[in-house]
Each structure stands twice: as C-alpha cells, then as structure tokens.
Length: 171
Image 1 (tube, rainbow, N blue to C red):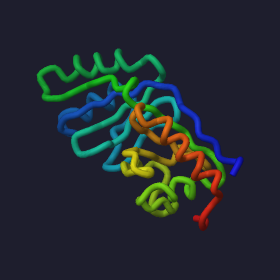
Image 2: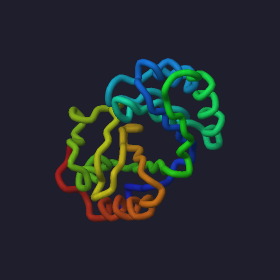
Image 3: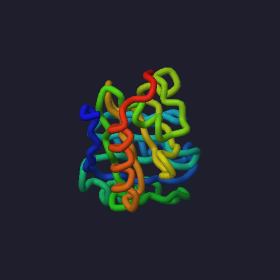
Image 4: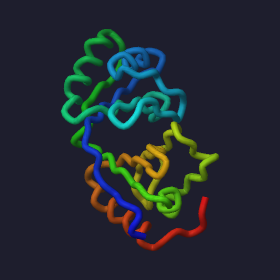
C-alpha cells in the first residue's frame, strides 16, 4: 500500500510525574497549553500536552527544548513531589500517514480505532504488535505514535509491513 508512509518526527519529550492536581498548572504554564482531560491531548504538531496516566503528563515540544522545559518544571514545582525528566533520547515519535491509517494501526492494536471510538484529540496507550506505544489522531489521514527508541526500528518496519499488506475492512 504505497499511499501509507511512516517517518520519525523530530522533537523533545518531557515526562512529568506527580499528582495531576499538584503538577497540572505547572505543566500547562511551561507548555503554554491547556491541561488535557483524561485520555486527551491538547495542542498541535509543534507543541502538545498529553495525559499519559493518572500521575503522568507528557510534553511534546521543538527539538532541543527538553532540558530547558524540565528545568523550568523543576523550578516551578519546588516543594511539590514530582519528577520532571527530559525523555527525548529515550522515546521516538513516528507519524503514520495515508488514507487507510486507521486500518494499518488496527491490524496491530487491540484498541478500537474506529473514528467514534478514537476521535481526534483522544490519546491512547496500548500495544502495536507486542510493542508498548501511545498514539493519537494527528490529522485527517495521520496518527502519531510514541514508543521507546530501542524498539522504534522494529515498530517502523511492523507499521510498514501492516500497510504493505493492504487494508482489511474499512472504517
């Protein structure tokens, strides 16, 4: 399926852990975005703020911004129990584009990827094959996927293979 492509999106990722009520305002301030609701992502292609779990937020920003953002979070959260860490070298963001992108991911994930089940703005943590990943709709025919750098090559090949096999069903 030549219409589907998979490529790495360069950028920084900053992980922030702690009680959402205690850390949410700082995350929103440093990211310059509204705090997302449960299983949501706010922002756009250049900068985003994602709900990862009840005690974890992920900030996506421009390449090289990670260390400064982690430092700014640490300063803003002085005295508040938290972890602010630049994970840019640990994780990779892939973009999968094409007219059958939902089907490509659906062949690999147990999550329901139908438009009504995973609308734009919703952030999902699941698996693609046996790889832990997070993903969201990043455009009309695109998904962004985050995974550990150690499995990024394998996941990219898995996504490309899923696309090459052609669509199975259609949403």
